[in-house]
Image 1 (cartoon, rainbow, N blue to C red):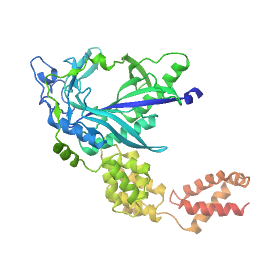
Image 2: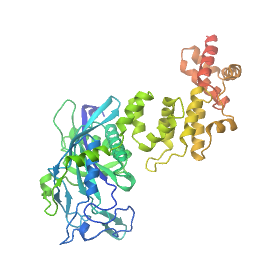
Image 3: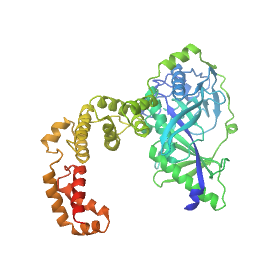
Image 4: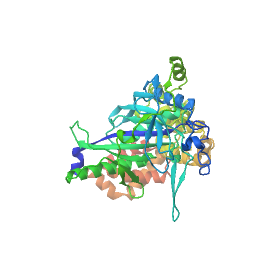
Length: 478
């Protein structure tokens, strides 16, 4: 395994995001998810002879907003091209996309990692149409659902600036947050409206030469992205170390086995025989329209992040975690207005609430004012962190006034020094081995006694006060 440390991974992501328009990119068919197969398609999105596509204006506007939100240069003149390839879920055997003149180029966004802030470049954002979907039915064969044909997409292509699975996930989360803030897509990964292809190669540390890359297709969860990258990195290093050759190919990640498998040889741009689509006019964007779109973009994650670090004293990392979900950021701001312990509130949200929260559903079961009450009670010492966790779990199941819940269930923190000293003396008497270990310099032995005292108080004891009184009691025995 030491050989792994001699290499570094080089990663670029191609993120596909379905835009939230009511109709498709080149026709009037609806884009509703989950409709009966082949009920939302027409001769235009099927590419029947004699049909003509008409570009959906809203698609262009949404793509430009995505570019502006990621610091891209917006093209005042761009065009659309035909990308030619045959696959069963692409009935017309070509996809309308953009090749050499995309709408947006040279952007970037920032992520927070172990080593602080890092800028990840964005090569381009272009518009294109989605393909259909293959449905594999046991004992019957493979069927084609064309409902998704022509659903508008943007493809966001990053620079190869990513160096770890953690950075890739952080980039994908930040990009998803930005798209959600702009309101151009619902980014529901479980429905396939946001997914990514991971391009990965490896090279010896210190080298500036890129290795041969593979592409892992259609990953639609943070967990799968992380695991696919970790496996593929290890596979490539092991292949190189045993004298093998990495093949430029498309691979799929199998979540059951946790491995990647070859699908097909990876194509280059010339294999697609791009040429300008003869049925679609160039896209020309006047400056006044660009200004209108720029003015319509709301406050973005980085602006909120700056506010949270300056106003509430949050770390950049904690602020990023909260602002990466617009629902959670809105919730935090409302709760923060109802407590003086905003930093503690943020810690509670990150450590406890996010464990219960499903970002795809976007529903938080506890009212902001009730979570603010928990932060306030913990901040003033009325309850400890252990009780705060219990209250949060209880309120998630059935929301109510937090302070009333604490009172009615007798969960207030025990700060009575006399009572706590009695519990400490009992625990010391029952844990003589831990006492002897402590006398020998094993200070960690005090944790066992501490645990018994907390158990005696049913988790309600003031841990800071117990630690102080316990240390004093044990020091007297030395």
